[in-house]
Amino acid sequence: MSFREAKSEGYVVTGPSGLANVDRLEEFYEDVQNKVKNRITIAHYTDEGDPIYIDLEFDGEKFIYVYDNTWDAFGGQDKGVNEATCTELGKRVGPYGNLNGTEYYLTSCKDDVGYSSPEKKEYYLLFVSDGEK
Image (cartoon, rainbow, N blue to C red; front, side):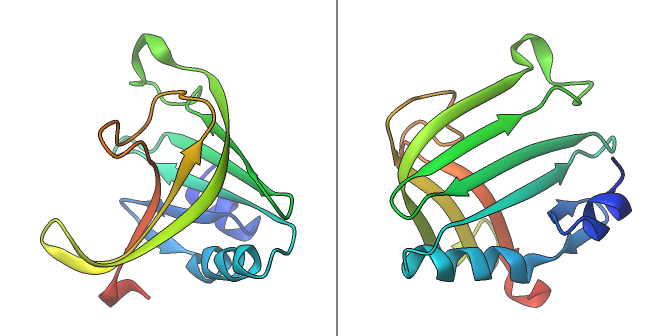
């Protein structure tokens, strides 16, 4: 699926072409705060244009996190679909590298399917710089 197709499907999309549908992630975050069931798909596009999908489903108490990098031509030998159960969706506002903005992440996960931040035990979801909101 292309960036444009993912955008039109309502996915939150990020990659070299920019960001799309970021408001969907903020709506999802607000629903989580209010314990409202919801689901969302994030499509991260690599520099080569390959999609990596993250499906998040919130059942009112916990998250099912599904990470799928099967379409990533440079994903290495660990390509596939991995799933974890988590209980917290976090949001940090402030510096991220040399940019300021908002970072979304999952934590308090029962399973470790390859944390994107092993030292913090967090799954990175998306960073939105202040200029991209």
